[in-house]
Length: 451
Length: 180
Image (cartoon, rainbow over all chains, first blue to last red; front, top):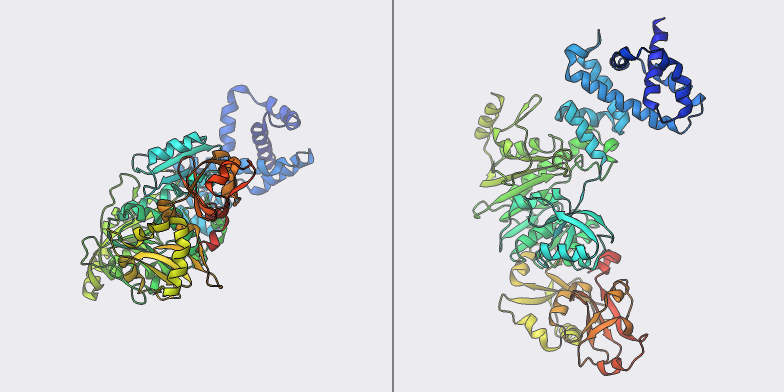
């Protein structure tokens, strides 16, 4: 008897959801709707929502097959998605107030499990990614993050001060029928493009290097690096050159900028952008970043390390990340990143007036960010320095069972759902002394950490 | 990387002088530093002393580019200018042609400049002289060779070719893999 009731509830649910969408379906279910007392209507719906979650998936599939029988055909997938999305919202609601909303016999863990599998199938991630992201974000924030990852980020261009000024560029582009605005108070060179009648990547101004198509997220690490005229700077993972050309512009084409990338094919786009933007102070080479400083050269004033990463902050650009990553991939990334950051630190001259290392990734995972910086702090004589930009969230100081150095709050994190940037991470380090941090001190740091 | 031999310098300067004439000396005698031309993998690079010392630590195999690339020597020991030299060429060019906005796109796709597309051209262009092509907003778009002198141009039909295309900035998209 009970099972039948349950079934009715679900049909009712479906019918209310599809109201207005499909006449035939409505007709079929109208008797059920008529049975309801108008006063108790809202109560019933609430009941169904809370019951729906723990109900076996079988019930719902049964109903869907019923609908197919009535000739809905193409609608299945979308309906399926809307059921999922509704169930996700409900589970999140229940989790926010577990005490009063939960069903008898359902624990938080049960709800989390069902939410996880629903998120996986609704957004198309693998289980590993969702559980990783669940560790970083609270549940409502996770939903916001996942939703933001489905949307494209706004197109941002960076005016090239070597060739033009932002105001002039904006005027020329407006004359070509481009609708744009300054990107925000934090940047003097960024412009957001809302709408364009011409392809923004092929105007004569673009070809002459007056601007670069560059996400807001790749301007921040360079601003953190704050290069000065006449310095010797290394960009370890340079291709395709968005950050490199920005560094050169801030150096006003003086000094020496070494642009390195491990991949020979990717250096072609690097060369293209460097010449197009009128940059003349670069040495372009392709080494493995880890061969600095021993096999190539060191003693730089500043080093930018935009390390290779899992790309979990740029899912909107490359959705393949959703399913292609597993624990081993992340581990491989972190190992490489740890080696790279030590090379980067060793390549800096600690006696220089600046001796700055900026580490950035387009990943949101703690393993690839805070943990790498924490590792560097333990292994080398470096300290974190604040990034004065007025935007971004603080880095994590502790995460699950791990405690990091308290200064890690000086790192900056950016998220698609907060700043509408790609998700990424920036840390600014200052080198104090050469060589490896001695074991004695390392123990001290360890004991501090474990306290 | 090595300095150019006498023979190479002669071929290179001959080509360069077609575009910028005597202004070559402005490239060599500069107030703001000691600049020179260097050869690396048959490419000629223009760089200052600071860049030169920094590029020495990079092995020949791993070095891709340093300073600005002007062009390369072909297998037949002729010199071919690349679009990457446009900045210096446009700065010192002796022969200039400005194209109308309608003809701009056609030139950027690699076509020659026709009389109908020319908005303005400098006086005293001689035939086969190197020409830098600008749009009406004075943006350098590329370069080529004059098919006719200024005098002949005045009396020619709208359909005649004025500048034979050699390189244009559209190559940054079309031909990104072979820029230098």
